[in-house]
Amino acid sequence: MPAGASPKREREFKKLEHKFKQDHRYQGREEEVAARIVNKQRSQYGETKEEQRKDRQGTSPDRNLPLKDYQKLTIAQIASRLESLSAADIRKIRSYETRHKNRKGLLLKLERRLTNA
Image 1 (cartoon, rainbow, N blue to C red):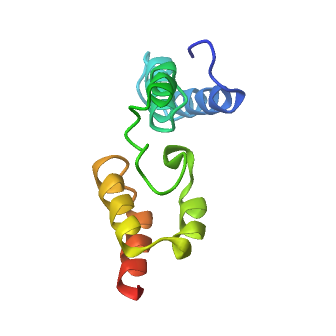
Image 2 (image 1 turned 45 degrees about the vertical axis):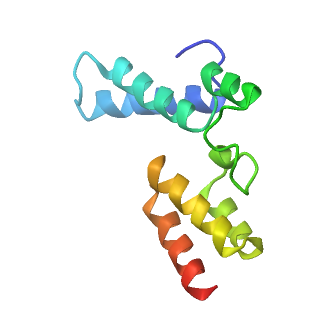
């Protein structure tokens, strides 16, 4: 794992590596595959230096969304805030979600909220 990874990501890495060894998956490459998975997640959630740089420069793709720090929010956190958003704001979030993370459960919640608005 790269320096600066959170203890949570370190545990996740070790758990994946152990699981791959136990299941005999990716033989000889368990560490590499686990690191790639965790690093991809770190990037998605804005935990890498590159993503933090984008935030500071104001070029982060989620900067114009109606929910602050959208990339770092879980589905439950987003769902709890949907009631306070307008239909236009929900459409912005849906568009962003489709292009980036594409989480099916969240997209369903957004669609339901739009039909009830």
